Image (cartoon, rainbow, N blue to C red; front, side, top):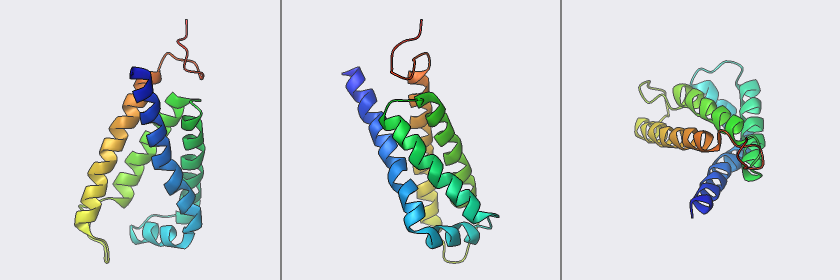
Length: 132
């Protein structure tokens, strides 16, 4: 049962990052505009890095490869996104503060899940076996 729960949680976290990672490329202009609204410099470059990271790390999580590195990398990205794009404490024209507050705290839950996933997988090789 424990293994099934871990695999399901890992798969759902992977899916959570895969779809938005792909959408960053499919809705490029919208995402760049959002980043620029929040005053982010080099928005196109950062968007490309975020999209590639999300898609690549998601695939690794689905395949149960490099889980600790991917989970910690995505956790760091969630924190950076939260501080720069879901900064509900700042007021931006056309940005809903209540929605950004909800996104901020939802992302903190995702951050916690990624930390737990990394912790559970520490001491395991890339195939999920315990290292001796």
